[in-house]
Image 1 (cartoon, rainbow, N blue to C red):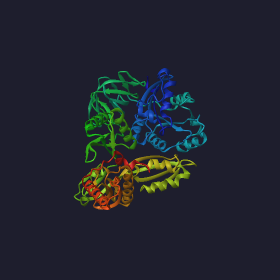
Image 2 (cartoon, rainbow, N blue to C red):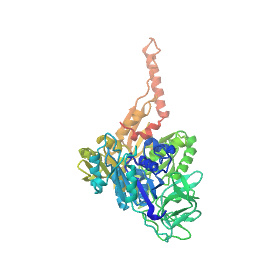
Image 3 (cartoon, helix red, strand yellow):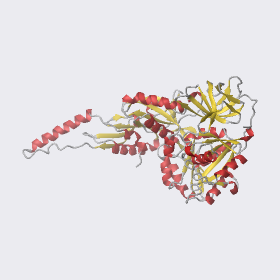
Image 4 (cartoon, rainbow, N blue to C red):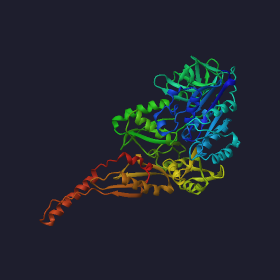
Length: 593
């Protein structure tokens, strides 16, 4: 196949706009997969992806159509995986922008369009789900025209579910997406746009070759991590692995390596060959750093080693996953794990529970903080319990994000009000078209971690969508908020909060804890404190057993004696009694009212 007959493209869209279904139809129409082997969301191989209806791991596939080789990358749609999406776009010359004809343009649609424009790709706009009764083709077409500046006639109307208009889309891909520009004589360079760990074969890389070529048995060097590996097998995905022995310039395929972990070959890194090394890597490589942290504890301390082994296995495939051991007096031994976002955390938790059969207690998610000490030393802490003595702290910096909310214009007031409630700063208001508004803002990440997305959906009647990028670390008036159960401080519940919000959050959480922690035979005090100052308190009253119930007369002093004995016993119990804190208490921030 000559480079002129190759077309490399990806599908970009907001979650649930029909990317994976469109990929199914393209594979079916090009005969890549036989009809009898066809199933819905064929490229979504994980059960979790099928159940949630989202793409978590991107998947490339090679198709043949009218003597052309079409290389498709089905990308994730969620903001947590935007770096992977950006690397996938770098591996292509064109992108199919899929917009749901009933929902219109959403926040992630805009974010992915900006990434595609930054990568200088040819964008083919497509309206999907035009056969739905709720489809509003005119309105959504106007939104796409306003966003891309294209003509209305350029927008293709399809239904990925029943295949309507997909054949015309294939012709458009061949006609409009440019062929890759290649030079076989340059030293070999290939971009890693995804990698995963296979239990039987080692690390498998998904790559796009830009210069030269890569053959089986070549010794490769990763220019970012400086690690070396051997190409044990080279081929393309159809969508099953098919060995071809060589990947030439302009092609997309896979390389099975002898590497032991994806940390040695990260997404975005450049591969070159030892026999003919390239001087400079391909641009855009970043080391992805997690910024959401949560403690994972097994239901019983006996299962700690199982949890540790399971996380180590998962991290072989997921280079963004970072973890450190953690110990809590209440929960025992566990692991503190860093994630790219809340969806990433949710997926890891579900995989640990399903694939490794673990019962987990997960603490409230938090972010990391940069601490500047009085002596000039800098610390990076992942949880409030790590905060040093306040007398030694010069300033605390917390991460802020640049966010965008896309919603119908009638909800703009409610959205701005929600942003202000979260200590956010409204920056800009623009309009995608006559109906759709784009609200830009800055906000502290910690305030958006727990229920911002749910509240946004609530105030916009489900029409609002949200996208964000990490911006900077800002110095703020932050304090550590501690919680005491029966006069004992529970470090796993401690939070970093802004001074102005501490009292409100303390009262709210203490009230929620009162609902979660079961009553005992003695009274339990629940308190919130900043340092030595208590700011909120609730009491859980004791069970009362009627110890005088069996008396049937006699002197009143018998009754008083029994009640005095009971009171004495309750006092003793209060001193020595242990409160059993249920796992629900540690995710109390995630609980809806």
